[in-house]
Length: 316
Image (cartoon, rainbow, N blue to C red; front, side, top):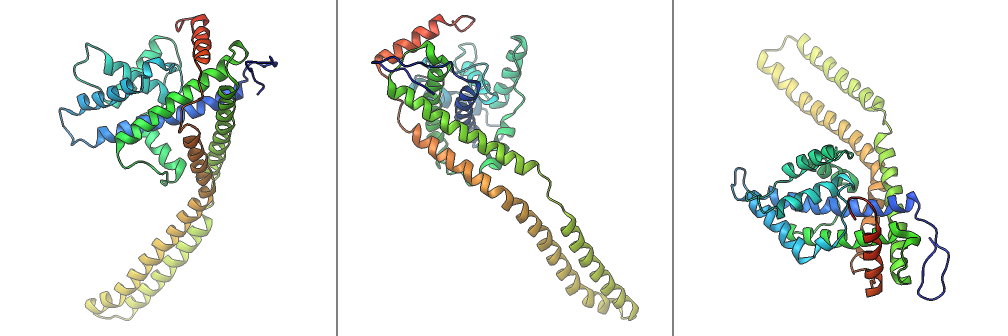
């Protein structure tokens, strides 16, 4: 991506779809992690706790104020995770809402608002996001022990990624400093890696693995056990002796059966491991990239603010 500098003017092309999609992937990643951190906090309360919704809302509001996220241009028409998070925050700050917020309610409200405004409705629930997160990283993503730390870190990274998404989205329409443009370029590079790695994992997950070998082994085990059992029956031994002879064989049969299907599961998992490892790697790189705030000058802030003011439509 070519750049604007404060000195010599260089030609800058409009942002391509791929660049914006890559930036959006990063924003979505940390919006998702913020939701999952809040979900982990919400789920830490006992079932039926009447304080849970209020305390969940207070936790999100505390971080929202601390990080000044009202100044961040989160997209109410963004990914499912971003839409749910924006809706949850709006419910938290609604002066008429004394009850609090649950992520289940925020998800339902996000769908309703999108339908009323004629936008694409979110189709992903927080439970789906939780499952996708486990599948993506193989259950081995390194997370803070405290959900409060995870929530704060995720929202911080979300805010920084959103700013860089704005830089990328404005393209040639806004002149920003070279370091900020380079930070946007780096986010795009890593976001493209993230997209590629997610596609690789999806391909591996969708490609069928034949169960033929596992079924064949199961048939052999069952045939062997059945033949042995019939042989014992033909001896005419007393019932107690019949049971004594069959019990060890049945125990061995169950042990070998479990080992057979465990081997099959390990085969499936081993095919996913490389893609999951790549996703963990790019996640760590993005955490490092967004570990400090983008190098934003006052002039950068003014340029981005002016660009937002010029944008037509309801967000103007």
